[in-house]
Length: 200
Image (cartoon, rainbow, N blue to C red; front, top):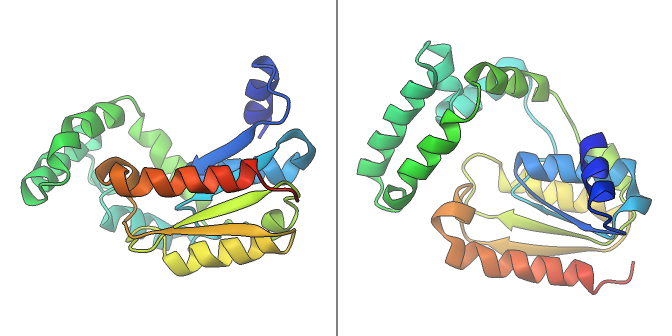
């Protein structure tokens, strides 16, 4: 939260709209809840309202092959790169993006990801969402295999406790921003417009 505020201050942004996807949505919401007067709006997409505890959370990420599985077997980033190659062969939609994904993963310390996922265990945004006072919108990825759509809808309901919330749905999974930008981007743009033009 301090980093988000510091960036906004450094860029001399008066009341910027925060837009976050997945974990970025968690950070954006936490920032807005802590400093609602500092931000002009909030758009959260593909983000959970809460996480399962401890091992369950790690299991979810391992099952979805989001690097933790590779870390746990000691394969590190190279193991994830192998997973991406196999995934690209199995799913034509991933193929054009496999090299980029592998490059992004190579920039991240696997041990850090492991600590990050463990620290997320048990978090709950219900109370924080109710403290958000700026205009807000939620983009729900209705075919999400990583962040349950029901949890995303509960997040929208929790934000609604603080005021009106614009809810937008996109028929895509958690990878929609990368794999289906033609489907995801227009919905996200609508969500941003609903916040920019809202009077809350």
